[in-house]
Length: 382
Image 1 (cartoon, rainbow, N blue to C red):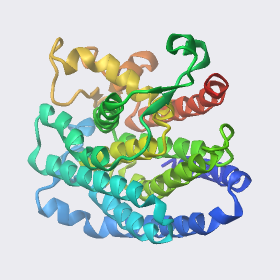
Image 2: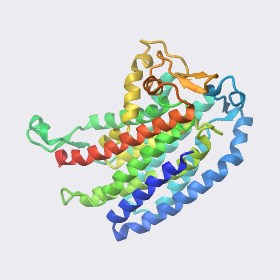
Image 3: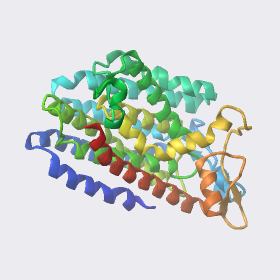
Image 4: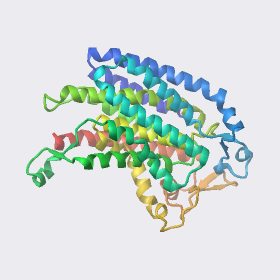
């Protein structure tokens, strides 16, 4: 598996972090690093020891992309994202001991929303809820954020558009900002959930997005702009690193077992958990617009899927490619409108492993492009 491909960029993040972090930040960053490493080890060791318990409890699935072969008849434990999510929550609880008291509200909001989303995601794995309920779950889970949020409700207006708001650089959205936060939570959770179905893709895309978020936060630890807001901005990005670094570590451990051929399935639990974690880190650190740049493949997948999602085109339960037993490759089904099938239409048939690598490479390219666009956009927002 390309575990090395998920790890090598992390050293680039460390280089950027060393260049931008202040001396007084390193106590908290070091605590985060140690806890995240422990989170990786615990998740890595715990999954193989408990995965059979999930199968015994009836939480298992069959690998549809290997239908007709021996591996396709094997029961694979489902919803193992619960393990990485549980370890992540423990890391966040312990990490709070090293944070300053002025972040209590942020931690409470993030902790409550992510925990609530993990609970609801696991309920979905167990109860197999219908799609209309999947849209409601993130709204329910985001309620702690909406109730506890005490930050600003203004957004930066790009320079070319400031003439529309009488030259103002900030536009106060008021209650509409709360609506925006709720909708972003719904999008992030469901965007990962509908861009799935092949070994390694759910956790692979999440690890890559986490790396992009870490890079963005590290680059912002020496911010430029209004002197009154610089320290608050720094603290926001340190807080986001607190949320994302343990997520990266626990998800990296999970990816080892979910990569092709998958020994475990991550389930809706992980997809909802990942999406809500990204939403919380971006909303509470005030870079939700940048996060959408990292979600470009998910946006493409969502837009391309709309005809099926709203019922214009018949939508099967599993919108997966067709497995060709003779070639061992996946072939596009033209009536299944998602990025997975669209990619196969462009590239031609691929093995499941090759397809996941192509899609993860696309994710990495889009995240790198997002970071470059972020640097360019700062000249229009400052």
